[in-house]
Image (cartoon, helix red, strand yellow):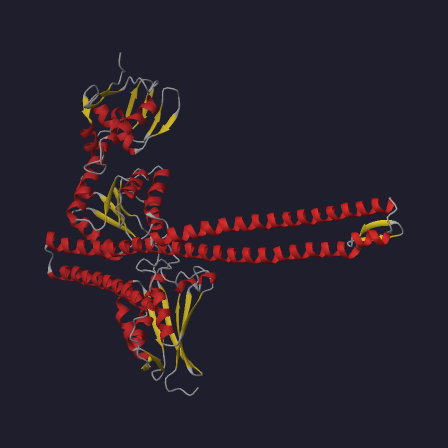
Length: 240
Length: 359
């Protein structure tokens, strides 16, 4: 799917802002659908799919965070870009925890908004393209089996696990560069894009989560190895 | 503000210590009285014992009686005289009553002090919370039209659209500015009304002209929101009010009705008026989100927004209806809100003194 043909759902209750966002996305070549509240958005998404949801946080009734959580609980992994009038860091973290991909505080610059939309779509295009064939959709290592398309995994002890999009993306980036060192900055850039998170420590937290899921002894990892001061290396067959 | 709070808390602590002290004083006085009375009784019992010993030793009862006047001597037996026992019991009772009255009075006074301070502290906390939520609300409410304004301007700069599209963007920007101006006006109006610095004229005004003027200002927005506004007002109905205040109350009520209709989709707002004795009544009825009957009075308090931020009343500052109530008070009129419940529409009734109407 080319970025220019991507479908975007804009969920915004302010008619002027909604119209402005819609018109600009159309001008960039996206196919745009609109919803004025969360219920309407969830209703549309039950019968349709899109490449990105631009989601206002302060919506009538159900707020944007609740809409995003509801989507994730239904197994819908469509990327979400939050728009909000509250730009404090705590709110930003809430948005990302609710399953959002990016967060933009109102008022925002048009060019920055368009850049972020492009960045999210590019990341997901890449992810989908590298998980497209049966060979690349499934990764097996150390008795674990990860299905990148379904965001599900079965671990070495037979446990079924649901992966978040970020966990799946990090695993994909590492697996793509199996055996090579991938820096934290590279992982940030590939998975989150620029300046969404303030520090590379976030990457470390995600690696810890992956170790807990897939390593027999997370304290002595054999697959997700730390290269001190640089980043991480993934070994499919485990460290000897 | 902080030093007042420290003063209030210190006073509260002192009053609480005083309560404990008064309680302790009561217990102490009661036990002291009991001890004193018991000691007196023991002393009289001792005197009675001595009198009995004298009688037994053969001293004449008259001599014993003269020596110990508080002891009654009869039939060779000595005992504490009945009036003396009665006086002791009465003194004890009087003391106890005195403690009960004084103690109750002090405790009541201290209790009142605690209630007054606690009330002041609660009121202060509420004001602080309201101010916090008001600031958050105002900043949110300003950021949305500001974001829209910035988006329109940047669209014009980035894309240089053809004139018809540019016109749409310009109209949108003007509307955003009008929204922000309304917010600023409401915030200033409410601040002015709070401080009572209002130059309020009272003159006969045609209600229909004011309503038609405000309705025409909001008609386009109502059409966009699929809301139909109808007004049925006799052209000769006149009310006594300030011309500016009359426009503001009608506009605020219509803004409120439009906001209440937001999430409900298409709807209606109906305005009707009638003369009632020496008064004129204007009814604004909408088919919007309504409210629970118990919230009717709370609607007119400052910063009250019954629906959470971002819900239907997305343009509201929580000041519109507060302003309506204050302006109606200044016009010697009144306003009331009625609804059959959430989702069942609302009815606002404004009542002014009539101008030139026979009462």
